[in-house]
Image 1 (cartoon, protein in one colour):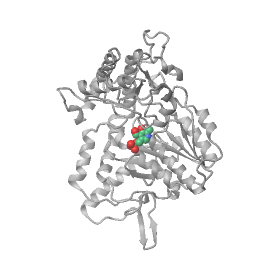
Image 2 (cartoon, rainbow, N blue to C red):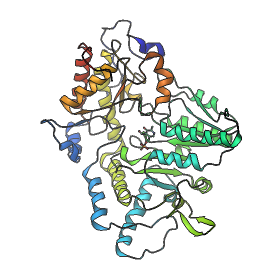
Image 3 (cartoon, protein in one colour):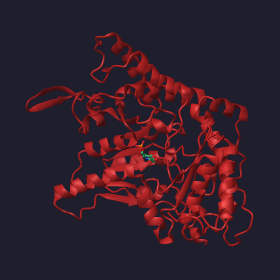
Image 4 (cartoon, rainbow, N blue to C red):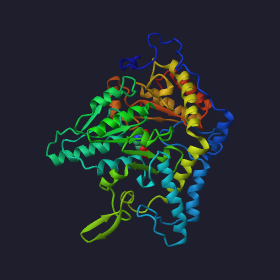
Length: 470
Ligand SMILES: Cc1ncc(COP(=O)(O)O)c(C=O)c1O
């Protein structure tokens, strides 16, 4: 069943039983196992056992595990100063009680850390959100678009960077009275899912007001190079548009600098980088945040109200309605410090490359008969992500179920919120819904990858008749 190759995938299916060629030419540096073990000790969840076995957590693209320093930071808020904050954009006024004064120090430091992480010039450019999805919704709702304006993205945007723009399109259709009005357009990626700058540049028109791009893919791990983003930003600015970067899958894995990239808005999620669940960031250039209409409004977004009108706070306060996740802010600062100071992006990169190279070398030879791997062949271009796709739902089910039941392996199956892309590319091959993703982070080990690969190998080599298809 060598269907993967119809779309230009990789692997040599001409000889199904030939040994795989080396996946990469360079030998990745493997971190000393000792260092990884030391890092792993910081994660209480890794000390758990079920049926006498540890968890094998390979679902890091969705959400990572949390180290004790982050858990302690969350607890510090609840134990020491569990009150409402207030040190937001209207700034420096002294709060009036003990707990609030203490919380404010953490609040201010957390916002600064969240901005510094991505090279923001001011903490006032940082809006706390629940996640990247909310951040992207704030931008899609807040930009003042007119009928005739165009929104551009790639064919593989995550639903969180697609649906808010489809909603913007729907609103513009209603306003214009033209139900056929095309507002959102997309450009194609390479056959192997990698980014093609020329195609993206060519898709920008004089009407492009928004280029909304995913920086790194949660499906196959491919990343848009910094120079390409810069070139796109320059082009989109030249036609009067803005570049909105969905950095949910890049900030947790690599250094991202908004000035170097030249982007206008950026979204990332702390829960994908050892931070608290339900914490995200919208960053925007201050002058653009000032022009953005607030989306969710009410308490804490306003400077003053009267019966018939409202004065909003300056950004970022006007975007943060109601009481906030103050524990989350304290935890976010701890996570950022942990990732940048204790672990470091170099360690993250080196370990992901070593693990993904190993996984690829184990699984690539098994392709063709039953499944294929998505994305470019070279694991160095796929971050910490390895996704299998198959026309057989039974195969994918079996790997997931056996992994969970026998070895506590946690992976993810499904469409990973890139339904539109998978439908477009893989419906005709019958595989769009049958995907299984293993995604590693710095605390994973080669041994864990081997447990998963052993299970894949066993399932692929066994008759599948007795497995359910759904
Ligand atoms: C590329 C990408 N964008 C956006 C999101 C949405 O992130 P969140 O669930 O934190 O809103 C995800 C989540 O997996 C993602 O992978």
